[in-house]
Image (tube, each protein chain N blue to C red):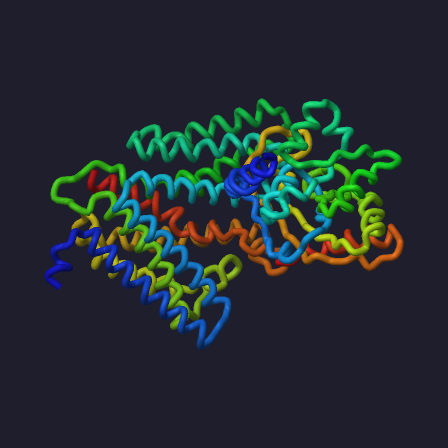
Length: 202
Length: 313
């Protein structure tokens, strides 16, 4: 049931909306042959999550969860329910064992969409990455991360706004990579470098 | 040959365009095989968009005229979205005002479809020219507000007002003894504007020596411009059966289209240069692509429209 809903939203409605709004997704082929991964992207807008979910192949849609903060989406019960139903999110509290839920999902063979900045920044600005992504990739060294550079969505729907306005934006998907770093900090830097490297690339 | 003569002007023209397109596509394909380079690629993307235009035009002629209005509306929308995205002149807080600017697209093309001439004429230069600054004032940020006030209506003029005149050609009333009608005029102006670009390019390649404005458009030469102008005038003479013009008027329309196509082209080039899209390194590929397609039409369309309107209607 949820699968049908997700396919309807992200494979039928969302591609049309994204096309009208002006979001172009590059290199969807990066998912080819991948079974489990963590998509890591810079974050400026709710449009990012929508675009990344609709970039996924159908077979991976139900098994891929955008990670969202419970402090924002878990404030009200109905909001948490709706974001799980329509966006397939997993909510985490930014406290002690926050990553436990994510580890459970990964152990089940599911994938994640992760925004290491933790929150949406100002349009066109990338904030410092938090360490969570490093902890996860260190704990699951066999799961690759897929770096994604997103540009322009902050103008479409920035933080604090509820009115989407059409502007051209680009979502560039990079190649799946296994983290090489040993420490958490090294992995965080590695992920950040991989995302920034996509910036100038066609 | 008899069969060709029995066809309507529009059918003959569609056949001619198909012939030209097939010829151009084959020529560029062979050229790319022999000597690949960025110039052939540019010509090939151009040909691709001509195929799309010709396809839409033919479909609209066969199925329903409303298709043309929707297609031109989408073109205006995409061009407006592009220029709003690459412009560094509008402020971030202008985004909600730009949302209202998009509203001009369905309104303008709605007026064109209904044939409501005065609303069509005043919506942007009078209506939006007032509405946008008013909304900006209500927002209350006065820092750089004058720039936003002038930039947003200018974007609308360049992308919506101008191109919508192509659509309005289809809503012009019937004239006695003029069978091709609005569709003929539309074909005439689009075909000649595009051909003028090609003529200018070709003559410039063959004879080009003296640059016109090197800082803006280094490939534009006097030889190319004049060669293109003369060729376009000849083409206008040959295609005058699509228009209600006398011979002199047809020659004049060729002159007008060639000149305004050139002016539109360099104005858009200058804008793109200002946005840093012409300098290598800063260019984002694919950006500026739609503006490149409409640059010469942006001025030739309204100028041709009022030329034919004042002379014949």
